[in-house]
Length: 144
Image (cartoon, rainbow, N blue to C red):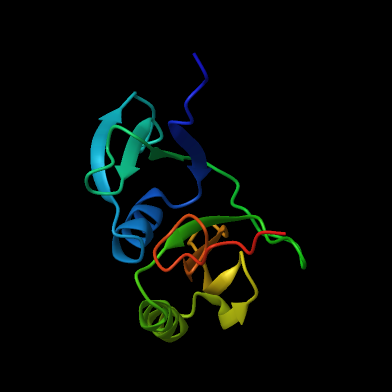
């Protein structure tokens, strides 16, 4: 059997702020939560998933991380596809008002598409795109 990518686990500085970010901007929901012990919630574990994809892929958030302050030119990020350029613009507008917009909306050639970037409360970049090969509005590659 080929391995299946099922989850990504992150230790974060502020668990509740990260849960709220991924709920509010990414539409994810808590699908599992437990406390493995520890002082002041240090053992709390939260699983987040897109509605309907709970058995496919989750983000596991754990408290106590050092945070991620990405260096200039480090474009490591999580990617979420949206249904239109207008939806990308709307996310960017909300993020700018909240002070977490990292990359203003822009159009790039295939396969990048139209996208913007936000910074989550832990310092991770989160991209929202339209027109990439893995999401809505995907263009077909030009055959050589």
